Length: 422
Image (cartoon, rainbow, N blue to C red; front, side, top):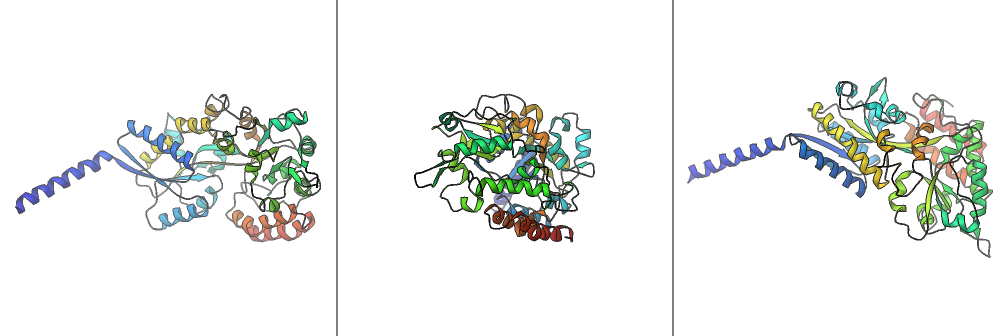
């Protein structure tokens, strides 16, 4: 009996070994995202695995934001790092500062199937430090979208905005589309945007002196303050837009206001598209964020995939990375409207710019990329926002402080925190 048990035990071990061998080299991928992204990533990997049984991709979904950074660094510290990490363009900064990413340049240079020149240059540059590339982009995300309700424009006899419109055009149209009841209460706003930085750029201002290697915050410059004042005036002087603090007291967020017909124009990013496609009550489209008096400029997001230095299988990890940032996944992202593919060839194709799904004018985003400006590449930028900038902007946009007071109090503190100087 013992002999029989021993034989069965050995057979089970042998079969288990075969099973492990059949699974191939395990590559762990940590990422975050909503249900649509989870499905796209899962489907992309599942299809790829059919042709690559020698590699076993283990997907590990996580919460985003600070929790994601904390979880990833904890795994690295515990000597159990994933092989690949999903990185957003700003999340990339503090993680890069920890020195956890593998230089992908040699893999890119030696891979005849992969061409980094296919991707939009600005987002590639964001993931490049010292001439070395540390992440392959999946998508780019200019804050250049102004979604507008065509029915409300038609009702007022207002021509639809075109991509060459200006800040003055925006104000004139927003005034006409802002409606009040008989008591003077606003029942329909003309415009809302959380993209305050676009107004700063439009007036010739900047957040810092050099995005790649910042040494000073410039939000207190005359040009930057003009942009911030224009944004504040939309809320307080012209009352065509709800101030951020006021908006937080309302029952509906900006996208809900837009979808319910209480907001004529809503400025955000292309990622709003899947939800907006559920609208059945009115027609809508998107137009490029308007030009300012001095120039055009947009804040931007985006994401990609990086390989961690702790991987034991860099060659296999790069193959998986090519899958994750490859054509099929980007094609699906583009078709859902959830993201603008980082691969120019795909972004300009039927999978994004040339398909007939709303918004019809999404092709303008491929042009908008040239005017994108990233947040400062500085390890303390997020802390500066959390401690000082967000509060200061709330007070400024709610007419509780002046631009001068904002510069003297908040910009000074930001410079002290980030650079040790006023």
